[in-house]
Amino acid sequence: MTTPTTSRSTGTRATRVIGIAAIVMSAWLSLFGLVLSPADVAQGDAVRIMYVHVPSVWLAYLAFIVTAICSVWVLVARGRVPGVDRVAGASAEIGVVFMAVTLVSGMLWGRITWGVYWQWDARLTTTALLFITYIGYLAVRGLEGSPEQRARRSAVVGVVAVAEIPLVHWSVRLWRSLHQEATVLDTDLDVDIDGLMLFTLFVGVIAFTLWFVWFVLHRARVMALAALVEERSLDEALAERAAEVPAGGQN
Amino acid sequence: MSTPPGVVATARMIAARDLRIEWRARVVTNQVIPFAAVNMVLFAFAVDDTGALGRLAPGLVWLTVMFSLLLCAQRAFAIESADGALEALRVAGVDPVGIFLGKATALAVQLFALAAVMVLAALILYDLDPPAGGVVVLVTSAICATCALAATGTIYAGLAAGVSGRETLLPLLVVPVVSPVLIGATRAVEAALGTGGTAVADGWPWVGLLAVVAVASAVVGALTFGSAIRD
Image 1 (cartoon, rainbow over the protein chains, first blue to last red):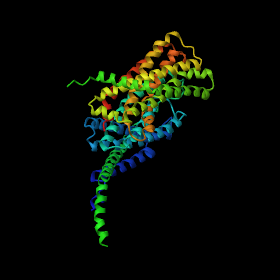
Image 2 (image 1 turned 30 degrees about the vertical axis):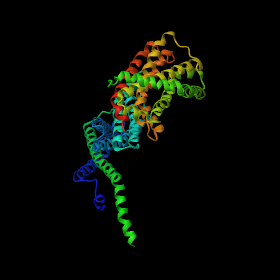
Image 3 (image 1 turned 180 degrees about the vertical axis):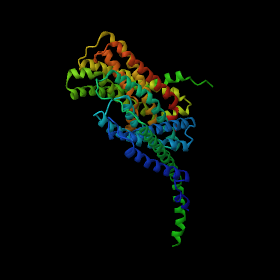
Image 4 (image 1 turned 180 degrees about the horizontal axis):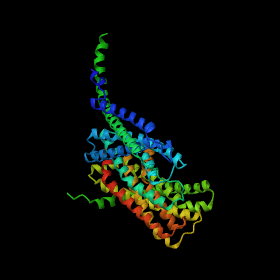
């Protein structure tokens, strides 16, 4: 009776192709990022952090944009689009993970380049606040309530979070403009990028985007299965119990 | 059949009702303001340097108001969810935009009173000597900042109303979003009180920032509040 459910997998031919492509691109990124691309004149090998940092930040923002678009969709449809809601949730989860990768890799890179882990510049501060905001978003997704209620609540947080990005960025920039320090360090992480470095970055962005698509598809399907289990488990447990009772009675 | 009241009339009624409840229960007056005041005293213990306290005063005032926002916003919806008042309003067909604007207005009035008391406390406790011309910047920035805080607090407190675990969830949701308000209000009050070495006129760009944040929060709140509170 439970066979169809247990045999169900979240993989399809498409996800397998995407997964293999992501592995191949990651291997390619490792080869170019660690071996073939040159070290930077000023930063040396530390510049290789860029090949993880830049694709992660791209991926995190891509994930949050996907969450925002899905959130607006959920609000317009008044929460009655469970598939879209699941994509919003899956995308935000992956966004939070890669935002963490961005912050950690950025701080390590900053320590080597600037001499400090943290600079109070607008980009960094906005990213950190955004990270906390999306942790809050995930907490809202975990609240009790019906699926529609949960979808609507988290969509509200998703929309407010996006409205927050320009305001936070702007206010932190204004704030920093008052506190301009006479710094000898270049606060920008920009490096003179040669052709091969740019190509490696490009490979990184493609590899990370493929991972994003792969993760979102699987995660959204896992969420769909979890919802199905929640819906069915009580009915099935009752049916199984009903089937057991007469048998037990005969023995 | 009479026509239902408009958004503004609804907002006015809800705000008057919330303020009347506060007037009778005196939770902000008897509990939140004393809590905020003791914070101002504790800051002095933590910093232990009158000169530094004077320089930090605007930031400390607004940090205290932000913490108090969490308590006041929680309270604003505790009075609704305790006996299903919010559901009753929705069943009665009251416009959610009106509910949002009314509750946010009542919250803004309470926060403004609290901010005024905290500024007074800072003037007395931290030995400040503000320039005479700073009052307009001070009052305008406080109005804009409390409106922005109240709008954001209302969206999230409405969203978390009646849900278990809301006490810990609300700060996580509200604090990152109100960070522009903390930056703007602190800098504006710094200019108004002359604690940051800046002229009073330097406060106006920050008032502008606060006004933009207040309007943006109110618009987003009005658009999304209905979805946030619907069961």
